[in-house]
Length: 201
Image 1 (cartoon, rainbow, N blue to C red):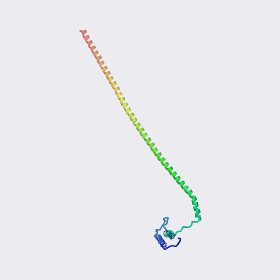
Image 2: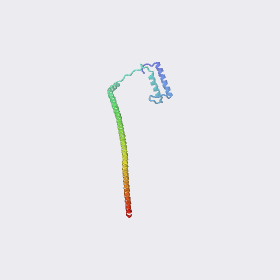
Image 3: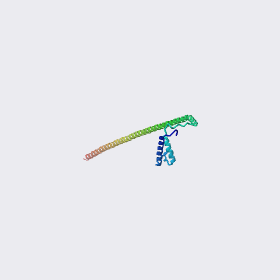
């Protein structure tokens, strides 16, 4: 600390040190890393740093003059800084390019998925339509077969009826002919008998 220390600053420092040491005694003092402080020397160092930070006036703290080495380091840092900036820019550009590529890939994947879904849906719709058409055609074939069977049955029945009717008509005609022949024979027999009787008389 540079300059004279006033009574106010001394009192403030003593108060801050007392607070920190009381925390250390109660085992509540923690370091910047978050670990509990066990060493008393470390606790004293923490108390002095806290007292200097909060109790010294801002005007009394003087900036130290930077040595020549720091100037050289500044120059070097100035020289290296554009390289670092260019590296950062290149990294940003590369990350942007990578993000763009990823987004393009994702979009292409999504579009490909959509197209595949559309193709699948089209194929399914085509298959369904084909199934419907095939069902309709099969139903038509079944109806055609049934109708042909019915017509064939009707035709066969008609043919059978015709045959039966023909047979019946033939039978009737035969019966008629046989009746006529029997009548003729009977007439002939009767006429013969009459002729014989007349001759005997």
